[in-house]
Amino acid sequence: MSSLDPFTRRALPARLARRLLPLALAGLLAGCSVIPAGEPVRLFTLPEPTLSASREAPRALTLRVDTPGAGAPLDGRRLLIKPSPDEFQAYAGARWRDDIPRLVRDHLIEALRRDGRLAAVIDDASRAQSDAALTGHLGAFHVRYRAGRAEVVVRLDVQRLDDAHRGVQASRRFETVVRSEDASLEAVVGAFGRAADRLAGEVVDWTLGTLP
Image (cartoon, rainbow, N blue to C red; front, side, top):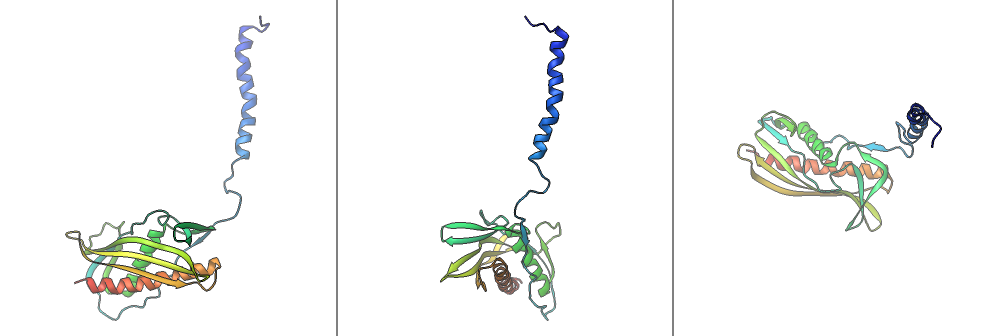
């Protein structure tokens, strides 16, 4: 039979808990950090489009550019490489500043605005009314190797919609392939920028050609 009285037996667990709590908290804090240790992540974005302003007068039309659809892993922020046709890998310690589909959408919007042949160009988050829409699916936005050289592939299937009836008025596949100057991350990002810029120029001219 225990020599402790009932009050002492009840108080002992509470005293033990008070002594163990600081130790437990110290252990938790030792395993946490506001900034994780390890290699810092570098954030990249596409350069501004180089498209020049058109000399044509703007049309009284508002175009909405939707974020293109994309399957994994193209819907994420990793800089992707395909060492073989059926395998994706990612560059370590590097990310795009946004998900790839939104990155492509914003690049197209900026190119259309710089072109200046439309009264307004909006994205799919805008509540403004539009006369037509540009939508599509992103099928490629990665690096591959051909004959030992790194090259960037960007492929976008685009549909131009009539916003009043949501019908497809025109559709086309665009694909650009741009060689990287070398295999370094900086050179690869530069090749992504040139490929996106070339694709944007083709999409802008095609879109304007399909509008009434």
